[in-house]
Amino acid sequence: MSKLVIADDGMLKKLGKADETAVIFAPDGTVLGCFVPAASQPKQNFRPEINTEESAPRMADGSRGYTTTEVLLYLLSQPRKTA
Image 1 (cartoon, rainbow, N blue to C red):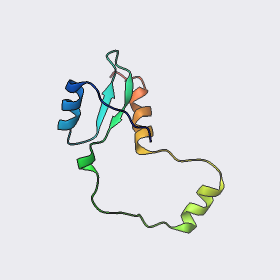
Image 2: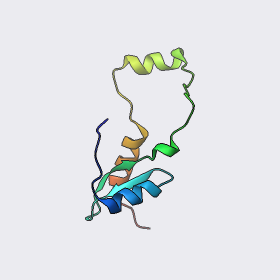
Image 3: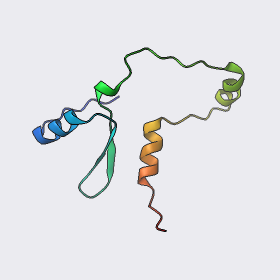
């Protein structure tokens, strides 16, 4: 994970007020990334149950999965369809 230092006081205040995941845009509308406030992170150490019968074939094919952030950024990068 990359570490970035926020030097702009205005942006620091905006991010400090965020209480949920926020998508960060450049002035031209390009998606720069997502910001997840530390306060919204779960306090418990949650580990999902893994069913090896289901996961073994998926892991054997060599393909990788995608994080929620990767999926969200992909979806946001797609042109919007108009009705």
